[in-house]
Structures are given as structure tokens and as C-alpha cells.
Length: 472
Ligand code: HEC
Ligand code: HEC
Image 1: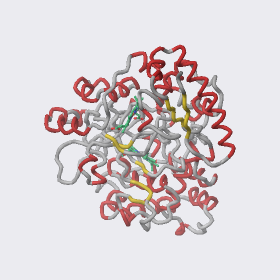
Image 2: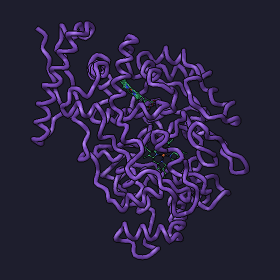
Image 3: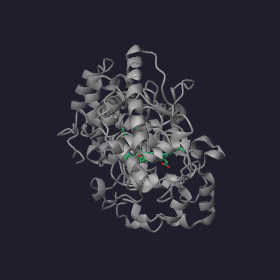
Image 4: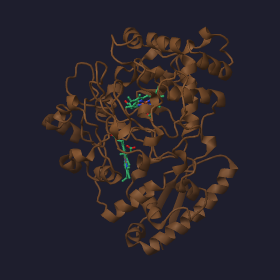
């Protein structure tokens, strides 16, 4: 007789225990149903115990607390180009709700560019963008999830309680103290990135100052906000310790942005969560089959685990390299070796953080450099990375036209030594899945989407205090 075991993540509260029991029965029924009408599934289950590890549903209590008034200031800051050196780009330009809180591009165009999403261009005139952004802009869903300890594709920002700033970050001791959480710590970086928001030295005072020392750049941005009476009023209302303009500093700006992001985009209403909470009708047959592949035979959950389908660890799945790369000091190849940049550990070459798969149907293109514009492409890549690399074509991308960049976009792919290194790095074992099974996986990933989360909670403001144009 086939025996099914359902193991669930451990938890201490009793409400949760009830849910476990409920889920146990739901899953058991689903498993039996699947075993009966899916011959393939029955085959795998016939000689081994099948263990399905399902997370608990995502809930509001899984998130960090936030202050409503601070989130409201954060909303204005997030959409305001005033925070950029040349006042021409906002966080929302690359993380826009109309584009799944990203930009719909494999590699975007930052400071100096013009337009949004697929129509974004390098812009014109002396301030036009001169290179592509090195990596794909990640979506910002569920960033307030309390267990998140690592951000960026290479994890170069992480919580570190032994560090006086509370974080391990690229600017080490210059990171402001008093940042409430990891989202706040992240939010200060785009502001001083020349290619993202600061602009080039000689173009504006932020870029010049940050070039001397990161915190000098933050001071100039803070000064801009101190000179805006509408921001001052909003900050004064939101933060008790702001009584006069000089009390405002970069921490408040970062903490407000963090409260906004945390509260704004949460995926609490996906069919998958409804299913986990006990509604066995929440998933279609195909989605259920995909779920069992994902958490079973296809072993996706060895890395895509937990409530957000990420273990927050780093692996190489050998995506094709493209674009300007994110080169290390003294490295002249246009390549991106990922985690090794942060860890200096040889085995971390080409490893990138396992991304969350929540709302993944809304966040194409996929991978740290957006190498695949559709889910089938990136899933198939996982099944045989080396072969996928050899067959990969640039029509998998969604790259904005950028004449100046095009000559070097794919140069690295011609470098045989580099390709060999990439092959060597692959951490994933090949497997055979049928087209039908891939359909099921896509169906399952679709069930991780919460359509209602997309517009955000506060939404896009009509206007921002600087009077500059809100990206739309
Ligand atoms: C020019 C485009 C661009 C702009 C503008 C921009 N970002 Fe990003 N953002 C990116 C890219 C690209 C990454 C990934 C970088 C990496 O991992 O190396 C990223 C990463 C992030 C992350 C980390 C997400 C994760 O899962 O690791 C957060 C949070 C974030 N950005 C918030 C912001 C905020 C807040 C602002 C405004 C202050 C902002 N971004 C402005 C492109 C942009
Ligand atoms: C060995 C760990 C591992 C396994 C197993 C694994 N993945 Fe991944 N997955 C990753 C990593 C790491 C990335 C990001 C790679 C990068 O950016 O270079 C990724 C990226 C993805 C993405 C793109 C998400 C995005 O937003 O860019 C999808 C979709 C995905 N995986 C689905 C799956 C599915 C489905 C399976 C099972 C067939 C699977 N993964 C198995 C580690 C894994």
C-alpha cells in the first residue's frame, strides 16, 4: 500500500496547529486524488514514501510593523524624482506598479533615460544615459516579510547584529545608524548609485558629493527635502523626533521609504494561500499537479522553499551573461560573477540569490539579468542549464534599444574560457520533465499570484511635493 506523509513547517501557535491538521487532510485528499488519476505521479509514489513539505499560508502577521504616517511620506518619496541627482528619475521609474513593481525590462536604463517600461530609451542631450543598468530590477513584493535577512541579487546587504550599523553592507561604517530594517538599509543605495539615481560627477551636487563619500551624497539629498515645506510638514507629522528642519536626516527618508514598501505590496490573497489555509477548491487540477511537482519530483522547493519560495541562499543556475556586467575591481571583462563579489569565496562564482516566486507571473523578465522573458524559458533553463546556454537566443530578452550599448551586450558570450567557467559553476542537476509537466509547473506558479496586490495599497500619488513629474 502506498503511504503518504505530509510534513509541515514547525510552528508553536495553536491556531497554526489547527491549520496543519486541516491542511494535512486537504493535502492527503489531493495526494490520493492525484495518485489515482495521474499515472506518472503514481509511479513515483509506488515504491517510496512521498513527503510533501508545504509552507503555512502567508499572513499579515508575517510582516514587520510599520507606521502609517511614515508610509504616507514614503509614498511621496518613492515617486518623487527630487531624490535623484539630476531630478529626472524616481524609485518608481524602475519599480513601477504598472510593471509588476519592476520595469518589464531585462536590463533597464537608469539616470538620464526617458520613458517607462518597454518604451524606455536612453534619453537625449548631455545628460542622456550612457550604459545599461547591470542587473534586472527585482520586484518589490513582500519585502516587509520579517524573516528576510538578505537583499540584492548577490546578497551584498544582509542583517548583521554584530555590526554597529546592524547590517553588512557595501559602505560598511558609512551606513547611517538607526535604520529600522533591511528595506531601509537598502533604500539608501540607489540614491548614491551614479547609474541608477545620482548621475555622473560634474552633472549635479549629489553625484559629486557621493563620489567623495557616500554619506556626503545623502546629506545633499536631505538638504533638498529640508528646503521643501510640504515634505517638512509631512515628516514632522510622521516622526516625533523631527521638530525643526535640521532634525530631518537620511534615516527618516530611508525609514519612510521602507514603511511604504513594506505596507504597499503584500501578496496575502493568492489562490495558493487560500489552498494552504484549507480551501481545497482554490487550485485547479493543473495547479495542484504543478504543486506536487514543485514540492515533489521536480525538487524546486529544495531552493524555492518557505513562505516566499526562497531559501535566501545562493546558487549558480548558469544563466547566459549579457550587458555591461558587474565587474570586480581590476576585472575588465563585462561579466557578472554574482555572489563572489561579496564573499570573495571562489565557490560562489556565478551564484545568485534564490528569488521569491510570489507574483512571478507579473514580474518578467526573469533571472538576475532578465535572460528569459517567459516562465517556460526560465523553467526549462533549470532542467538542463548547459544545453539551454548553448541554445539561448537574444529573442529571449526584453531589452530597450540602446545603440551605444549594443556593440558590447553579448561580447562575453563569445569567450570560451568564460563559458567553461560558467558551465563548471552550475549547482543544479539536470532532469527530464515533459512539456505537460512544465505546463503544470507554470500553472502552479500562476497560483502564487495575488492580482489584488498589484496596484499597491496607497497607489500612485497624483502629484509629489517637488512638483516634478510622477513617473507614469
Ligand atoms: C535605475 C533603476 C532603479 C532605480 C531608480 C531604483 N532601483 Fe531598486 N533596484 C534596481 C536594480 C537593478 C536592483 C538590483 C540590484 C542588485 O541586486 O545588484 C534593485 C534592487 C532593489 C531592492 C532590493 C530587492 C531585493 O529583492 O533584493 C530594493 C528594496 C529596491 N531596489 C528599492 C529601491 C528604492 C527604494 C529606490 C529609490 C530610492 C530604488 N530601488 C531605485 C533598479 C533600480
Ligand atoms: C539549486 C537551487 C534551485 C532549484 C532546485 C530551482 N531553482 Fe529556480 N532559481 C534558483 C536561482 C538561484 C534563481 C536565480 C538565478 C539567477 O538570477 O541567476 C532561480 C530563478 C527562478 C525563477 C525566476 C524568478 C525571477 O523572478 O527571476 C523561476 C521562475 C524559478 N527559478 C522556478 C523554478 C522552478 C519551477 C524550479 C523547479 C523545476 C526551480 N526553480 C528549481 C535556484 C533554484
